[in-house]
Image (tube, rainbow, N blue to C red; front, side, top):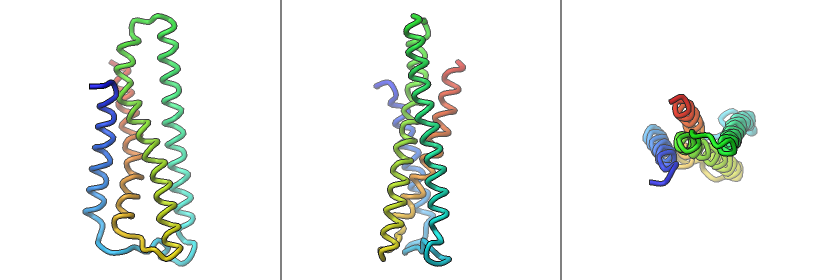
Amino acid sequence: MLTGTSGLIAAATVFIVAWTISYKTTPRGSFEMEPRGPGSFEPHFSNYVSTTKLIISLAAGSIILMVSYLEVLAKQGADRVSFTRMAVASPLVLLACSIVFGVLFMGMLARSYEGFIHGQPYTRLSYSLNVALGFSTLISFSLGYLWLAFGLVQ
Protein backbone atom coordinates (compact mmCIF):
# COMPACT_ATOMS: atom_id res chain seq x y z
CA MET A 1 0.00 0.00 0.00
CA LEU A 2 1.21 3.51 -0.74
CA THR A 3 2.13 5.79 2.13
CA GLY A 4 -0.91 7.79 3.19
CA THR A 5 -3.48 5.40 1.73
CA SER A 6 -4.97 4.81 5.17
CA GLY A 7 -5.74 8.53 5.42
CA LEU A 8 -7.49 8.46 2.06
CA ILE A 9 -9.52 5.40 3.06
CA ALA A 10 -10.46 7.09 6.35
CA ALA A 11 -11.57 10.26 4.52
CA ALA A 12 -13.68 8.26 2.05
CA THR A 13 -15.23 6.32 4.93
CA VAL A 14 -16.03 9.51 6.82
CA PHE A 15 -17.76 10.99 3.77
CA ILE A 16 -19.70 7.83 2.89
CA VAL A 17 -20.92 7.39 6.48
CA ALA A 18 -21.83 11.08 6.81
CA TRP A 19 -23.73 11.08 3.51
CA THR A 20 -25.53 7.83 4.27
CA ILE A 21 -26.66 9.05 7.70
CA SER A 22 -27.64 12.45 6.33
CA TYR A 23 -29.58 11.03 3.39
CA LYS A 24 -31.42 8.39 5.43
CA THR A 25 -32.43 10.87 8.16
CA THR A 26 -33.60 13.56 5.74
CA PRO A 27 -37.28 13.47 4.76
CA ARG A 28 -38.21 13.26 1.10
CA GLY A 29 -39.17 16.34 -0.85
CA SER A 30 -37.83 19.84 -1.20
CA PHE A 31 -36.66 22.22 1.49
CA GLU A 32 -37.09 25.90 2.11
CA MET A 33 -33.68 27.59 2.40
CA GLU A 34 -35.19 30.87 3.54
CA PRO A 35 -38.09 30.00 5.86
CA ARG A 36 -38.05 33.49 7.41
CA GLY A 37 -38.24 35.30 4.08
CA PRO A 38 -35.86 36.48 1.36
CA GLY A 39 -32.29 36.92 2.54
CA SER A 40 -32.79 35.04 5.81
CA PHE A 41 -30.25 32.34 4.85
CA GLU A 42 -27.44 34.78 4.09
CA PRO A 43 -26.22 35.16 7.72
CA HIS A 44 -26.13 31.36 8.07
CA PHE A 45 -24.32 31.05 4.75
CA SER A 46 -21.74 33.59 5.92
CA ASN A 47 -21.21 31.67 9.19
CA TYR A 48 -20.80 28.36 7.37
CA VAL A 49 -18.27 29.83 4.95
CA SER A 50 -16.31 31.59 7.72
CA THR A 51 -16.09 28.42 9.80
CA THR A 52 -15.06 26.37 6.78
CA LYS A 53 -12.40 28.92 5.81
CA LEU A 54 -10.99 28.71 9.34
CA ILE A 55 -10.77 24.91 9.19
CA ILE A 56 -9.17 25.05 5.73
CA SER A 57 -6.60 27.59 6.94
CA LEU A 58 -5.70 25.54 10.00
CA ALA A 59 -5.40 22.33 7.98
CA ALA A 60 -3.27 23.96 5.28
CA GLY A 61 -1.03 25.62 7.86
CA SER A 62 -0.60 22.31 9.68
CA ILE A 63 0.38 20.53 6.49
CA ILE A 64 2.94 23.21 5.66
CA LEU A 65 4.41 23.11 9.18
CA MET A 66 4.70 19.31 9.19
CA VAL A 67 6.39 19.24 5.79
CA SER A 68 8.82 21.93 6.99
CA TYR A 69 9.50 19.94 10.16
CA LEU A 70 10.26 16.82 8.11
CA GLU A 71 12.63 18.80 5.90
CA VAL A 72 14.50 20.10 8.96
CA LEU A 73 14.80 16.55 10.32
CA ALA A 74 16.10 15.33 6.97
CA LYS A 75 18.72 18.10 6.79
CA GLN A 76 19.91 17.20 10.28
CA GLY A 77 20.23 13.58 9.22
CA ALA A 78 17.90 12.47 12.00
CA ASP A 79 17.25 8.75 12.33
CA ARG A 80 13.57 9.40 12.97
CA VAL A 81 12.87 10.90 9.53
CA SER A 82 11.58 7.72 7.88
CA PHE A 83 9.55 6.78 10.97
CA THR A 84 8.15 10.30 11.24
CA ARG A 85 7.20 10.36 7.55
CA MET A 86 5.32 7.09 7.97
CA ALA A 87 3.66 8.36 11.15
CA VAL A 88 2.41 11.61 9.61
CA ALA A 89 1.60 10.59 6.02
CA SER A 90 -1.95 9.33 6.59
CA PRO A 91 -2.96 12.11 9.01
CA LEU A 92 -1.68 14.70 6.54
CA VAL A 93 -3.69 13.08 3.75
CA LEU A 94 -6.74 13.23 6.02
CA LEU A 95 -6.08 16.93 6.69
CA ALA A 96 -5.72 17.49 2.94
CA CYS A 97 -9.05 15.73 2.39
CA SER A 98 -10.65 18.04 4.96
CA ILE A 99 -9.52 20.94 2.75
CA VAL A 100 -11.04 19.29 -0.33
CA PHE A 101 -14.30 18.59 1.53
CA GLY A 102 -14.39 22.19 2.77
CA VAL A 103 -13.90 23.68 -0.69
CA LEU A 104 -16.56 21.36 -2.10
CA PHE A 105 -18.90 22.25 0.77
CA MET A 106 -18.59 25.99 0.15
CA GLY A 107 -19.05 25.52 -3.60
CA MET A 108 -22.03 23.19 -3.31
CA LEU A 109 -23.71 25.34 -0.67
CA ALA A 110 -23.30 28.43 -2.85
CA ARG A 111 -24.61 26.49 -5.86
CA SER A 112 -27.62 25.25 -3.89
CA TYR A 113 -28.42 28.72 -2.60
CA GLU A 114 -28.05 30.36 -6.02
CA GLY A 115 -30.26 27.68 -7.55
CA PHE A 116 -32.85 28.15 -4.81
CA ILE A 117 -32.90 31.92 -5.34
CA HIS A 118 -33.54 31.32 -9.04
CA GLY A 119 -36.43 28.94 -8.45
CA GLN A 120 -34.76 25.52 -8.35
CA PRO A 121 -35.91 23.25 -5.54
CA TYR A 122 -33.49 22.49 -2.70
CA THR A 123 -33.79 18.71 -2.85
CA ARG A 124 -33.11 15.96 -0.37
CA LEU A 125 -30.04 14.96 -2.39
CA SER A 126 -28.56 18.48 -2.36
CA TYR A 127 -29.35 18.97 1.31
CA SER A 128 -27.82 15.67 2.39
CA LEU A 129 -24.74 16.27 0.22
CA ASN A 130 -24.20 19.70 1.79
CA VAL A 131 -24.60 18.28 5.30
CA ALA A 132 -22.24 15.39 4.52
CA LEU A 133 -19.57 17.67 3.04
CA GLY A 134 -19.78 20.07 5.98
CA PHE A 135 -19.49 17.36 8.60
CA SER A 136 -16.83 15.51 6.58
CA THR A 137 -14.76 18.69 6.66
CA LEU A 138 -15.01 18.93 10.43
CA ILE A 139 -14.62 15.22 11.17
CA SER A 140 -11.68 14.73 8.79
CA PHE A 141 -9.93 17.75 10.28
CA SER A 142 -10.49 16.51 13.84
CA LEU A 143 -9.49 12.92 13.10
CA GLY A 144 -6.44 14.08 11.16
CA TYR A 145 -5.24 16.11 14.12
CA LEU A 146 -5.86 13.31 16.61
CA TRP A 147 -4.12 10.79 14.35
CA LEU A 148 -1.20 13.18 13.90
CA ALA A 149 -0.87 13.70 17.65
CA PHE A 150 -0.92 9.99 18.44
CA GLY A 151 1.43 9.23 15.56
CA LEU A 152 4.04 11.70 16.76
CA VAL A 153 3.86 10.67 20.42
CA GLN A 154 4.84 7.03 19.80
